Image (cartoon, rainbow, N blue to C red; front, side):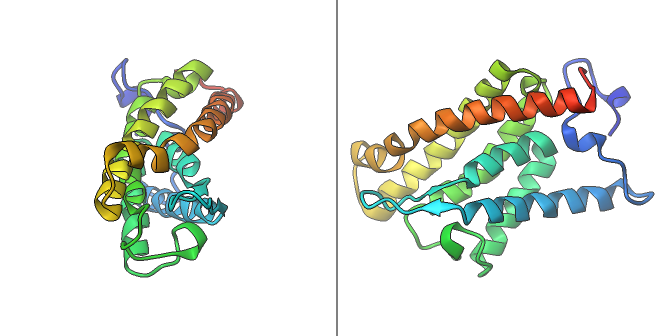
Length: 198
């Protein structure tokens, strides 16, 4: 998709600038989607288990938001759908090489699909061009991860909302702030490197 075909409020994402590897753009898009899946799977392995919560600290949500913003909502969502499906079918893509669905933090994994779509949607509207816009993108996409994640925790563990928030949100807020700062530097810098302002 070229920037000439986009409306003034819809902008290209970084993946739109990747040249097509064949005459068919679909092949390039498939490669980008698969790369996004593997990128998130690799970052999920960078995890720390906390003794007071069944939800590990991982870099997968950072990778999800970066993938969604870079690929756009459609490709980002497809990349996360592939990630979820592969993990459910047994690929060791989740934290610490886990797979399947019967674990306390699976709600967060399911939320990666809409979170990538939200990040991609906001990136198409230029939120990834500035640090503060990127912080807003991270906040919206992170909230999209927390809602299903907390709901799954409540159902899986049989706990109330307050306990689920203490287990699945509060321990991760500092990490979210760090993630927002990091992405607020990475994404606008990437746009400066490619020399695009549209």
